Length: 447
Image 1 (spheres, rainbow, N blue to C red):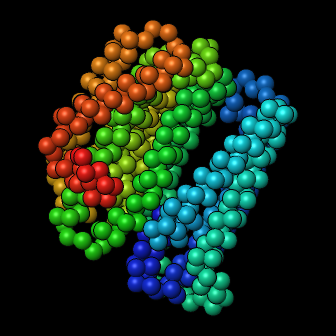
Image 2 (spheres, rainbow, N blue to C red; image 1 turned 90 degrees about the vertical axis):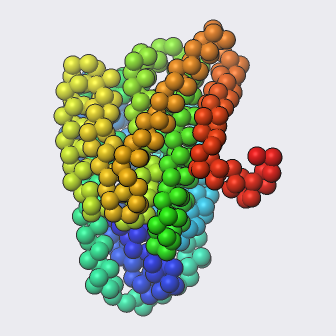
Image 3 (tube, one colour; image 1 turned 45 degrees about the vertical axis):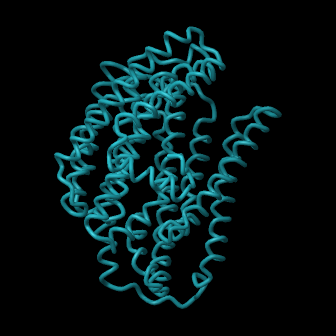
């Protein structure tokens, strides 16, 4: 629901059509309230079958823990719909301040609780309370920034806009099902066919990887509205140029992080939790490949969302869902933890990998698909050889796993990955564009 209505907000916000904005936000409120209630009710109905998803469960009070997590998800919808107005109006930074502040407060409180009175009950109850308080605070801030939202008089939404939203929502349902099947079923499959202990190990690695994704998502969420404005008013050549710069930047970021993960992810887990929480190398390598494939989609998906192309690839997530579930279940039964990761990789390569750029370049950005893949494989080859070389050099320089060696390893990976990238691509137009931005906008005259 969110992306569909956010897309519909771009034009009325640009034209200062406040009546349409109010009508859209009223629709947002009704929809999100209904969704929140549905999640809570449906989640409680699933409660009697919770044990079926967990192999060898020995955790007491796990049903109550599930209810708290369920409420944490459900109640967030009651206020969070107002965040989307900030996002559509290119004020993502306000939302980010509240989100980051809430996470910092939550982390501090949870650490204090675990040190003073180590109770998992208090740990997750704090999560619920901070979620409610943060969403309420954001809602109040939005009312201050947009006082017209308090107006009682709201006109009926234009029929054309309503039809567009309904059409996009239908497509988004399929997209969200596909996303849920890929990102939210791994733990269920592992707990069902391998055991809860495997979920714990997997969650440790996923926590680190998702932290990187969450950090980068703030950046891409903040530029989506600007790209939407770009697509609406700029020339074809300008849109193509900005897309290529964005894709180049995404590939650069993916290379830096993937190299770091390939060299240091297991060292990080060992320093943090100990050797008994480590996965085998092949599992970690598959996690990194899956991360790289997902991260490399960010430029295409950001432009696709800003273009409102939800309907055009509505069948893609359904195919992705079927392929992912079948492959993940089959491979997990036969090969364990690595199977659920391979299932995600297979479903991505067979669907998202080629469908998403095909839809974007056919309907919004005028770039040939073969040129896209030519650059994609070039970036991937550079990332692969840089990662292998970085790990070989790290192994030669550092033998023991220590905090000092880890910090030096981070510096080594950053130095190698950035140096190789800059040397190889220094003459590309995208690099020149980024250099000029750094010189003009950030005062880096030495570049």
